[in-house]
Figure 1 (cartoon, helix red, strand yellow):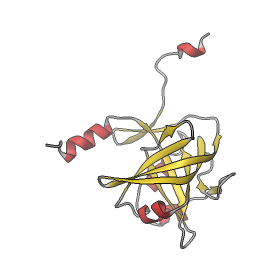
Figure 2 (figure 1 turned 45 degrees about the horizontal axis):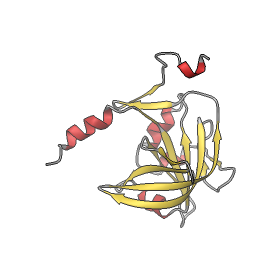
Figure 3 (figure 1 turned 120 degrees about the horizontal axis):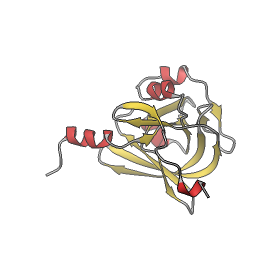
Figure 4 (figure 1 turned 60 degrees about the vertical axis):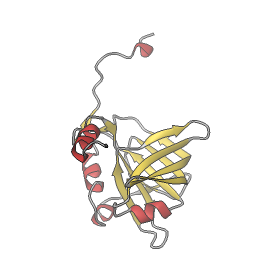
Length: 169
């Protein structure tokens, strides 16, 4: 018998993760659609692929799964306001945000993020109440800074607990 929904939510809250905004252009209206995701991960080195999970009840679901490309903005530590804004439903989140366009693909990106990843949609897999969106990475830019993290229902920053032994030699 599966575990309860509340216990499952607690499991998710016990895992710290990076925070990003995934955005695309709607194929019909060309309007920006986007959402906050902490489920973004690298998937494959060769070819370079990434993935994120998208709840089927998300207001951007239909636009995201029909899009041919999407942009991922891995948020910097000072961008918790943007993360909170894109975690909500509604159009005002994109109307209150300025976007840049990818250098390789025509995808919306949040300026001043820690990294930008430009992807062609490769696969969409349905699993439970989510879709797993897989993207082929066509472009990426990395910038200096610290990541925004999400843990136990709150945004925070990374703090190193010990020196990295690989960097001391």
